[in-house]
Length: 372
Image 1 (cartoon, rainbow, N blue to C red):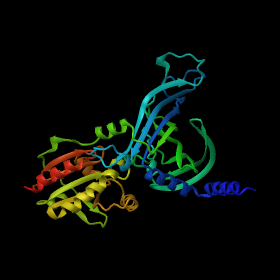
Image 2 (cartoon, one colour):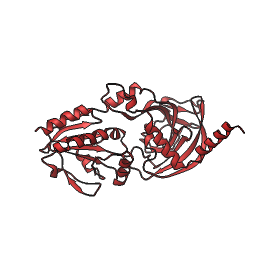
Image 3 (cartoon, one colour):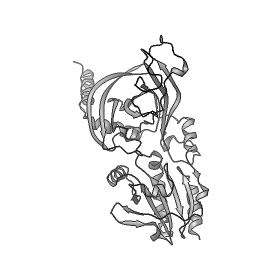
Image 4 (cartoon, one colour):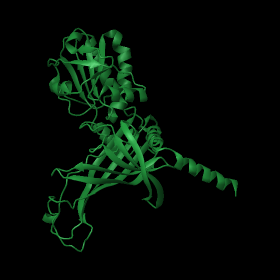
């Protein structure tokens, strides 16, 4: 038998032989090291369920489908002159939504067509292996990607628990992934989620195209700019709400006890892509400004175990306070993250920022507060 054929068979055997856990981990790590990725997909669900408006049409087989776009870029592919060191993953689901019948011979007027809410089931490609309780291989299937046929392993993944704020954990805590073991690419996901009628649907997220290591699409830069660099000036000058939370070492920290120092609060979580991108800058500025009187704390609604594992994986060291009941989140009206809040020496809010911030904005605010 030719040596080349023997080598190919051996390499293929290695791909098949890897454990389900290894395949999930390696796939997540693959997305982490890519210079960029842009992924288009169709997200659909069968909505022939009792109670859905219009679903009682005899013989109907309704499908609700939307388009989805996902993209991210590392520092290597960020456009020159951008204030952002990287472009975190952005998911857009909801474009081109429409309802169609798999049996077009059944005629229906528009008011007969059922409707469901758009799923929020984003795929966080670089975090597929976080908070995993178990991974089981349940089969294999060849999927089409453009003109190519791609053999995939089907993994059923159960996560450790569902949090209403943990976007990377599916609604039912169990999800199925179709992953190419040779390319380490995820091509399909099935998960369950309720619609606005409180009916639980099984959704299919099917990838239709993948672009790797290319200049990021203009819409990604637009989306990052739209959700970043914003502020809420109405908070400026208000008394900073007090709270008492615990850190990794179970020491309690009261905000009021820090009066006389400037304090920066970085509201973040492991499920927040922009938080991951912004944290190295926050840590660097903390190290630089600490001697000048600036105290910096992260505030997260993650559990200590989840946060500790995440910080170890990504080599982060931001001092972090844990807010499992989201008391501080509520006190500061934090509904989406990251949010960064600067408090002056007198306990007044100086700046309230939404989303990722350019370094120049942060430095200017720090210098102003510390000069007083």
